[in-house]
Amino acid sequence: MRKKARSIAVSSGKGGTGKTTLTANLGIALANDGYEVTILDGDLAMANLGLIMGMNDCPVTFLDVLSGDANPEDAVYEDYGVKVVPTGFRFEEIHENLSDVDSERVEEVVSELLRKTEFLLIDVPAGMAETTIISIAAAREMIPVTNPNYSSLVDCYKTIRLANVVDTWTRGLVVNRVGRASDISRDEIEHFMGNTVGSISVILDVPEDDTVHEAERAGVPVTVYEPTSPSSESIYELARVMAGESDLPYEPYEEGEIDQTVKRLSRALTGRKS
Ligand code: ADP
Ligand code: MG
Image 1 (cartoon, rainbow, N blue to C red):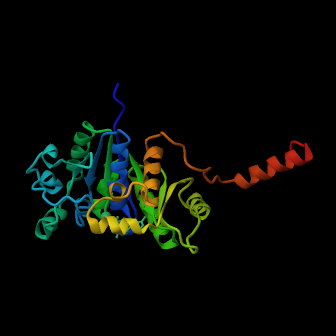
Image 2: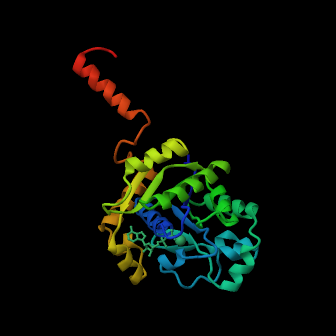
C-alpha cells in the first residue's frame, strides 16, 4: 500500500531565517533520495520560492488556483526533479488576492496535491498574518527554522504556539546559519523550548555557508550548485532524518538528563541503587 503522504510546513517567526532556501533544497534532497516531492509557495506576499528555484516563466500560479481561475495541477511545474507550485509576484495581483485568502480552498488544494506526492513542503510566510496561520494549519507537521540567536528563537516559539493552536505537530527545529562563537548552543535552544513549549528537539544545525550566496547569485539551489558544500550536506542529512532513514545525529536534550547521568554515575561508583 502507498504510504500516507506527508505535509510539512517550513516556518519561522522572523523573515530571513532561511525558510525558502531550506524548503527548496530539502525538497531537492528528498527527491534525489527517491521520494516524490511537491513544494507549495505559501508565502503569497513574497513569492521567493520561484526565484530560488530559478523559475521565471510560470503563467499559472498558486494565486490563480486560490482565486478559482485554475486547478492545482495547472500550476504544477517540474524543476530539479521536484514539483513546484509557485506564487506569482505581480504586486497588484498579490495585493488583491491576499486580502481574501480562503482557508478551505487552501486545504482543498493541499489535499489534492497530497494525492500525487509523498512529501508536500509548504514555504510559510513569516509573522502572524492570516496567510501564515492558514499555511501552517494546512500541514500536519511543521519544522520551524530559527537562527542561533534569542530574538529569532523567541519568534519561533510564537510560531510553535500558533501551530499548537491549529493542531499542527512541531517535528523539531532546524537551526540555520550556525557557526559563530556567539551563537546560542543547541542545549540552550532545547532547554529554552523545554521550559516554554515542552520538549522540542533540534533536528539539525545547518552551517553558515557562503556557497548559499554564490548559488543564489547563480540562480541555482545550493544542493544542485554544490552538493558537497557544508550547507548542502546538512540539508541532505535533514532529508534523511525527515524521511525516517536516519536518527537524529545526536542525543536530544531531555529534562532531567543530568539527573539521570548523575544517578547512573553514582550507581557505578558506589554500587548502590540510589
Ligand atoms: P526566508 O525565506 O526565511 O525569508 P531565505 O531563505 O530567503 O529566508 O534566506 C534569507 C537569506 O539568508 C538569503 O540571502 C540566503 O541566501 C541566506 N541564507 C540562508 N541560509 C543560509 C546559510 N546556511 N548560509 C548562508 N546564508 C544563508
Ligand atoms: Mg522566504
